[in-house]
Length: 267
Image (cartoon, rainbow, N blue to C red; front, side, top):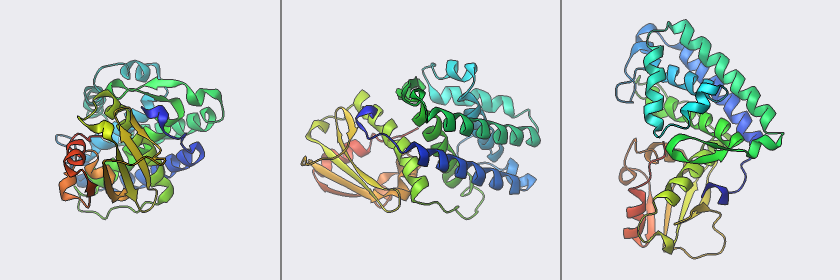
């Protein structure tokens, strides 16, 4: 499960969150009214809805209502209600919450990462439990990075904002933790033979995969190896696109690897 993975670099996670928050704020502030109201790549959500979703998610990280919401069975259902509420808000209100909530969450992470609280397990709906610091920082970096680059800028035909190794590492810290829990909860048949997932390029790494989730590869020999650029994982790893259409290479037991890849859907 997620606790087999190495402890994330919390200093990097905090810095990545602050940087991605700034990038999102600058992007959202730059939009015209028509861009603000335009549809995003997420079905049924506008660009404004995306901004409202990120602000409400950051707000939930430090409020009793957010802790209660995290105990509900479905994350996607929990995400929908705050978006509906914020559709009645002005753009100024949505932006004010985004700025305030991300700033407060960053301060919380800065404090928590230096205390034993960083390791306290916190539940996130059906995705399982995660150490507090990873949940606060990782989930928000992932949301900011992925929504901006895969749901918002493509919908507006705008250039994809650049990223870097440190931010990609933070995104992958979260995605692999979630994937580890998901894999352990519903192991693909035959997965105990072992896979190695290698994500190449800035922020990348390698992970052993079996019925208990993800772990450091070590010296074990896998039944199959899966290799792809790290920068593409937030797209096909969330089923925004098919891994079959991405630059994903498989070696070894291709049937087992394909069976597993068909299940990968980090939310």
